[in-house]
Image (cartoon, rainbow, N blue to C red):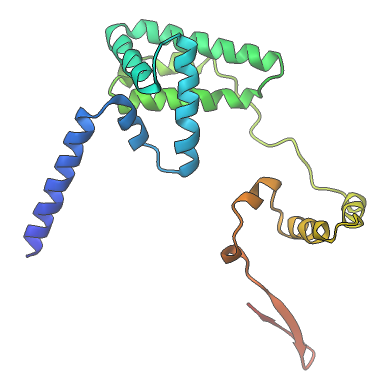
Length: 200
């Protein structure tokens, strides 16, 4: 019984691998994306690169053209990647994007090549040398007590609870989009015989 289950699992994996090998390039690319946000951002950023190349058609048609061109002429791909990085560096100098954003355009392109078997044809080390290092830490700071007090004095009483939550927990504004009630743990403190007890 256990051997037949393992055999069925093995057959299922082989079929999945065969389907993946015969799949179009974008299907292979999307297969590598696990996170919901990556599935949203990576294709959009890859499409920007394909549009930069001047390829016509839908994203699937553009991806097929790009893959064919890369397999025929890897040097063309390296040159186009470097031109794309240079274009993004110009956007940085104009103040349109931050330096650290350029890597976000580089990663989807490299992943596409890796998933479609043409990554070894491209000299990624040479391309990545042109990428700026970018700032690793955000340029922000904790609010001062005076700033917090001014925010709490705002007439809308919802602001007080929002500011208090952010200050006490350290979350940033973007975290509110993902915060759910299941993430909140209520903590009640009370004293019994001069000893503090906590209930979680």
